[in-house]
Amino acid sequence: MIEELSQRLSEPTARGLADAVAGAVAAGSVDRGARLPPIRSVADGLQLSPTTVSSAWAILRRAGTIRTQGRHGSFIAERADARPNGRYRRAVGDPVRFALDLSTGVPDQRLLPSWGNALRALGDGPAMHSYLDDPVVPELAEIVLSSWPCSPERLTITDGATDAMAAILAQLGGFGTRVAIENPAFPPFLDLLESYGMRPIPVELDAHGLVPASLHAALTNGAELVVLQPRGQNPTGVSLTAQRARELAEIIAPTSVHVIEDDSLDGIAATPLVSLSTLLPDRVLHIRSFSKAYGPDLRLAAIGGPTQLVGPLQERRQLGQGWSSRLLQRLLVRLLSDPASLQEVQAARAAYSSRRRELVEALAAEGVTVGGDDGINIWVPVLHEVSALQSLAANGIGAAAGSPFHVTVGTDDQVPHIRVTAGLVATNVAQVASALGSAARVGGSLAR
Image 1 (tube, rainbow, N blue to C red):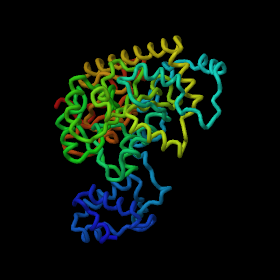
Image 2: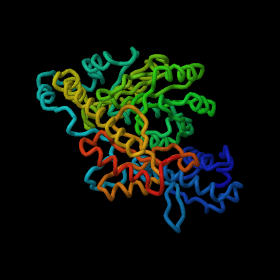
Image 3: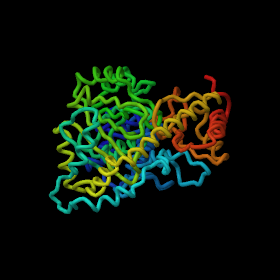
Image 4: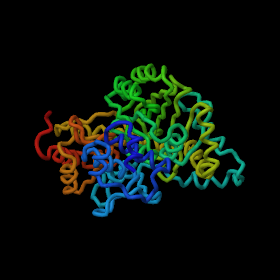
């Protein structure tokens, strides 16, 4: 096995070794279930440090490629052993009852529109029972395209944004594909990259979106795809500005790179959408999901883009689930066209914007500065992640650990953070801000 890894080792780093092991498994050169040599043997055989090998094993464990059985050693995982949602589970943690759980990143159920009228109205429409019907309900396509940021050549519907992202990544990438992605990023997207054996390349964020110089460096480093959230980025709340979009488009245009945009805030976003699809229509796949505004169980998202990219997505789905439920699509049509439902969503948008602003202002009074301008989450800097979470738990408040959102963990210049779902803070804002301020300062002062 060591000889096989030596031939595949592209760089003497933990990631390089992890790529070599994953590549050998994918090629069938190493059998699933096979026992890995001891760390010291691998280090000596490949002229690496034991620390480098240990770090590579940690990467492979997170990706579900290997499993460890204590003193019995480490083994190549069987397919059933893979755990591709490791970051997401670490972010939200195991289910714990808090008096106020701000760890989830989910919308407030009390602000979701009622489905009663829409469900009753479904009985008035024609049923669609054929396997050969259009996978996209025409009425839904018409409504969605009326507010799309550009005029995409083709539109399809998937079972939510993560399903859309998974389908796009499977089509445009493969093992070893380098993907430029925001840092911090949405953990399920990082889990997807790890599960496909892709390599995330972190791109810095500032108040205007992706930092151009950082994106340029990622593309220079071989990134073939760019993944970004154009507004209310989860977890930071940062939204892309028009000027920054033009700067990013100028960097991407001379390359062959494709862009995947995930807009998860349609309906409840306080800021207007700025999309790279208006500048690079032949290179961008834009995802719009509806769960934040209309309910997580709706499980629908739209993908729009050039036919050469969206067409194969639809064809591949025919080999699996075929299409997203047309019944749910018709329900969404009713929700998107019912005046009462639209009014409820408008009220929710105003409530989320107000809640976020009030909590950010209250935190500023506590000496804690939070960036971003939209969305239901805030990214709170702390001195020590675990201590901050423990401090909040003692006050009956749950928050999400920040480290799973980072593409790379443990760098010297990385400020610890926690993610807080501000959209769920409807009352007692001052008390919540006080608890967050105390948690942020556990261990010293936030002055830096």
